[in-house]
Image (cartoon, rainbow, N blue to C red; front, side, top):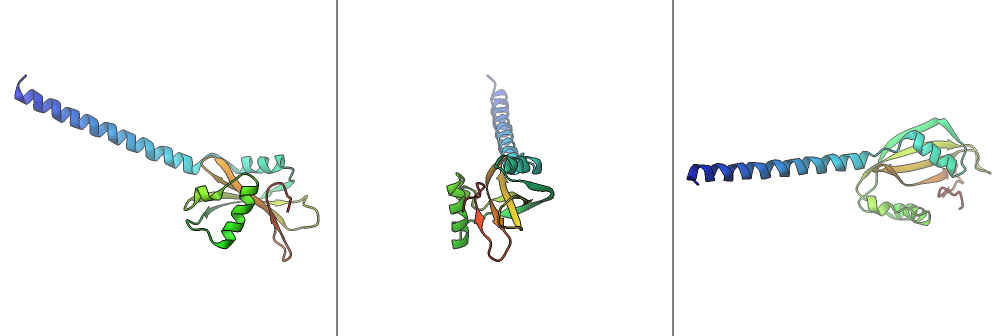
Length: 146
């Protein structure tokens, strides 16, 4: 085989490997972004809460991006303890930005100002709480048990 053809084949192989690596890198980035943004909608979060037995005011819905700290403070450790009791673990999402859906709850007995928060990431619900905004309030998991 002539030397020029060998050089051409080496260059072609090098370029082909580069293209394959570039495609893999782009595919990985797109996959990560897709996982991070997810597909849980406000409607999904509202339906989830209703399946948990909560009556919510859908018109009160708020959507917010929140940051799960990379290092948990004592307050975040206590909040994560609530999550662990209900089968979630926010420590898996340290350093991530997640979406929080909030709704007013109308059927929590004994309290008037009650909110439900649903945390989502990667197309799934990763935690949340039911809490009172009153001075003598509470915070609990989705079951409502304190």
